[in-house]
Image 1 (spheres, one colour):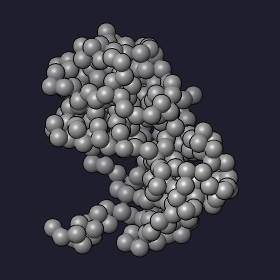
Image 2 (cartoon, one colour):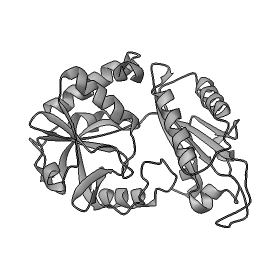
Image 3 (cartoon, one colour):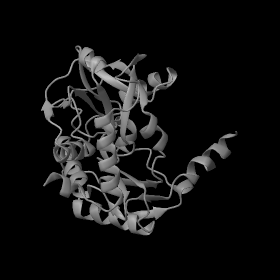
Image 4 (cartoon, one colour):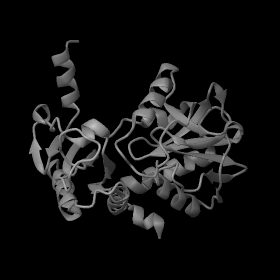
Length: 299
């Protein structure tokens, strides 16, 4: 397939592109060569899934975006305008089930680590169809473990994702779907997901700290587990305990909840998504597809 055909194939998967609030054709979407996001990854992003005509967890995503911007000191973003742009783009695709990706960078300037500020923040948004995840949800996925090589502020949803890309490439080369980062013998999170273990009927997850992202779907999992009567224990989890767990699963906005049935060629549990994982998936699917909100799960 030639380069032009590849480009057209990729564009066909894009439902809408927006630059600085203006909707543009996908093949005409361009950013400045001076954008600090391009040179330094100097920006943050969010991805929101829609269900039943609503952007699910919209307020929580916006709160996390605001925190990420504050933590990297981009303090001149009109969040009201960002909100209007995101909702306007969603309306423009008739509120179909989709994934809404948007990013904000510090702005444009001749490449230098420190430049005169303030700059005009740059906004890019892309809407794509949701991920076809049914097979992986049904059968589970395999994962590898990977050394924790990321920076020490993974709680910020920044554009600096090269370590995640390398980890996922390593997983792909080994026929796996996800890479689980290991730091000094303990699990942090997946390259694109939060990860959980089920041990003796309890849901075990790492407490929030600067090494992991405060996941929106992670919030939902905790709320669902409470409703199902599953005990929750927040504590560090070692790689060895993960490998011995009765069940392991990963979750994220795009790929939802997937049981992890093999890690580093070691079968987890019975080699299929376990009963508690399946109950969580069933509740999550029923709740989101019927118009249920994240706020309802957090009450």
